[in-house]
Figure 1: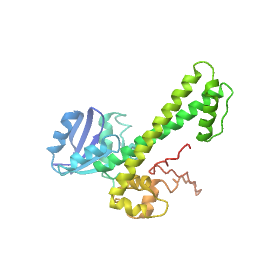
Figure 2: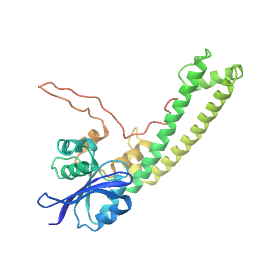
Figure 3: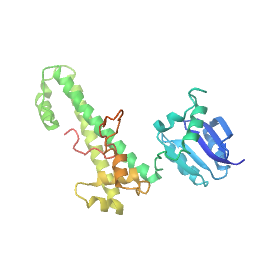
Figure 4: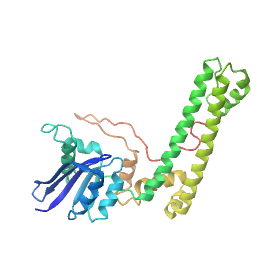
Length: 279
């Protein structure tokens, strides 16, 4: 019997592989496959359906497996949990691979679009920039806490904070002057890095015809356009705009029971934070 479905539990160095034949019987069970042996193992199989959880490295492996004629489907880990054989085998890598192999064949399963390399590069720009913005905000919050210990309380705006610090910098006692000066210099260096990433993202958006069309819409700039395209690609994995809105997080999750409708909160996670964050 030929293998038609394979589930792979991804990891850093040791992977678990579970394959079944057309009768649903296990035909390839390898609980420990090293990283260097995974691709040769999958490459020698006839074209089949491969399921994996959408985690670190999943898109990279999906692109490699597609080059060998396989159909790859990525799933959110929370959708795989119900298929885990916890009552029989407990939680281990082999059980996870078997659960993934089962989940990928379900007709109502929802899959994660496989991202191309250039999409992940653009997303890396956004995530790095977001990290710098968060670090800058944390730096200013640290400054507020330090100077509050000596009785200096400043307004919320960063411009007001910097003005107050410059006015009191020479009056700060002991090594506090050095600490505040170093933190201000660090915040300045973060401003430079954020501005540089804004320029790179803006240039990348202007080079993409699809991003330029998005930027023609009111309220959409380079950051939003490039992040949206890098996240959903051409959008062919969605049937309509309503599905895109739900995937982005513009529609609330539903937790209804007993005839009572309970709607959760909306969570927009695709779009990057504006460059004025924290200012």
